[in-house]
Structures are given as C-alpha cells and as structure tokens.
Length: 258
Image (tube, rainbow, N blue to C red):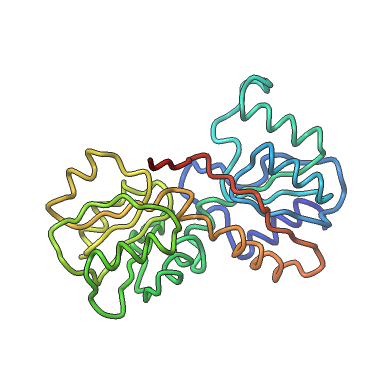
C-alpha cells in the first residue's frame, strides 16, 4: 500500500477535515519508498522515537502530535523541528499525524480516558460545525470530590493539580484532553461539576474556584493511552501491515518531590 493510499485508509475512519481548524494533521514527511509495510505509532516524534523506528525497520511513523506546527522557512539542525525533520528524511521515514482528528473520534482521546475513569459518556461538550470537541460524562453515582481526584491521579499515574470549586460531590464531568481550558465556558454551560483538562494556568484556577472544580492531570498523562488505542484501530483497518507501538515515554515534564 502506498503512503497516500494508507493515508486515505486512515481518513476513512479518522477524517482529517474534522480536526480543529489550523491543526496540521496528515502527511508531514514523505519517504522515497513505494509501499507502507511496517508502521510505528507514537504520541510524539523525538530523537529516541526515530531511532526506535530505525531499529524496528519500519517505513512509516504515525504520531498523535504533529512535529511541524508552523510552516518551516528553513530546515536548520540547530532547531529541534528542523533537526527531527532532517533525521526523518535521512532515515527515509514517512510521518503522518492525526492529533485532533483522533480527539473528535468517538473512541478517541477523551473517550479513552472516560473509559479508564469508569465514566458513562453522555454527549459531545462542544458540538459545532468543524469543531466537535470534548466529552460530557457522568459518574455512576455522585462521589466526594477528593475520592474523584484520587481516582484521576491513580489512573493518570502522577500527582494532579486541582481546585475544589463550590461543590462537595462530583456527578457530571466535562473533559478535554490536552490543553483545553478554552472550553471551560462550555463545561460550565453543560452543568459539569468538574472540568478535566491540562496545562491550566494559575489565574484560570483562580477564576474557576467559586464555580466548578478543575482537575489538571497533566498533558501527557491525559493522552498517554492514545498510542496503544490508535495502533489497535489502524491494525484492524490494515491487517496486512505490521504495526508497532512505540515504547518510548515522550513526556518532557519531570516531577520532583523532596
């Protein structure tokens, strides 16, 4: 299967036109090979991920996050993006990115975390032309806020940041994986007791503290389940292609507690 045919097959399930406007999904680097025979799926493209792909002998990388977010005016080895693009070209690897096209997929980023948390999905948080983003879900019964915070921290695997809001118990949950605080107003309008998203700023916590609870498990932590799920989806689409899930932990954030 040629790379453009492979991309078309992906789009039959994850149509790239539904990605958030301006999100650079799709084919970012094309190799010189004729066929897609072996693919590795990753959350991010890093030096270690490319080296892993070379060691496995794959011809294509499918990454959740794009490598190139803004147009490149030059490819410079002193620049991280330029260096990695150059490394992909030298390794003759294609790169396809899916990002928010997978976020809006019914079994995508937010649905995965909902399932891990044992929540019952209800509806899309923001349903609009060209932007169906986030999930509104419910716990099976109202639970104390701190019990729910503990569950999120346990599932996501790291300390979480949170603000308590004005409610002692959690029942309705709004969620946007990754940097999603711009959807906070949608969460309030949806009647959520808590909004789960990442990269929340100090003053955003402050603004929300008298309304609903905010839980920030971390950007990587919310999206860490994507590569395995995406691998499974692609394998079912293309049974004649061999797929690997990257074993590299790409989270650039480290935690220290004295």
